Image (cartoon, rainbow, N blue to C red; front, side, top):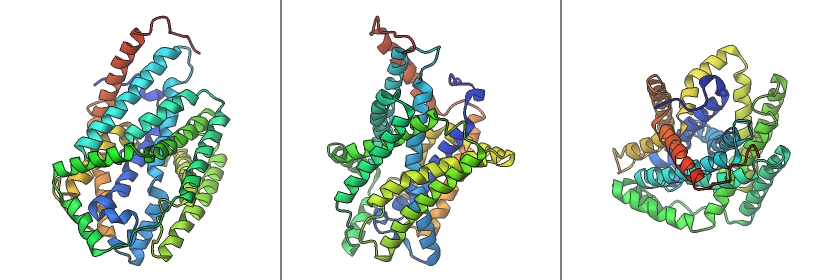
Length: 398
């Protein structure tokens, strides 16, 4: 496997660190449903509700759930511009054609590896692939318009959530038994259910709203990168940004979570319109605080050493995390559990250590993760083929 076109010196290491944070954070977001019960998404208290478990849930609900997926999408927008933005050595049609080939490959990877082989219908790869096509078309608009477009997307999402029914079904013995039965089913039963869920979801309006969410984060990432958020802000500005975004996000998302928990989770925390509006502030806060911490020499070394290798293998380790959850906790593999929230948190931390060590070991021998390499080869090969059948369309530096 060869080094990607960008040399190590060209990489913005803090972007790899942020990707690594998102990869590991997704373990803490996934494990409660896989290692406990699928009903935990609407009723977090069924995994135990001691004071400590409430604290763990509240932290995850505000800082991890949906925020790590949002951070991935934000960085996807940044990468889109880095790969396709105007540059002297690039021409428009080959660059955009290669990028579209890459998104097609990402869609196939998501469908084959995640939805089918890993039996996880709620995949983000095909959603990102679809949303990226629209983001690419809009990418060369004024950066401020892109930021406003991202904000507008979240306003639309919040309006949709506000008008929807977010009430939760009660937890009954029958519901618990049904969830446990589905969880304990064998590998091929999981695959069959994943395909059915994927078909049902993809043919509904649900995919439109998921693409809008991902696309809104991508537009924010595009716009913020172009105005220098990821490269030019002073320490003081980053500190103010961290305080402001976390302040708003914690107040809004934390307030919703505490309020609905006090009411017995009669409504879904994740689907509340205020959660939708507050979560982008948390995501931007994560980005700002990591960049601020990395301005210090010691934290730069620590975060780069721990998280950057994971971020360089984000696609491979995203799939590895899904495989870990499927084969450790369900009837498709070992069928361990169900676990309480303390145990699940410990297992997620252990899984994170495994991914960190695995990434460092792999990158000591290779320059890229296996799926990153495969996606790059696919993109280059299919991109060159598509360009070859578009004669006379090599527009320079449009």
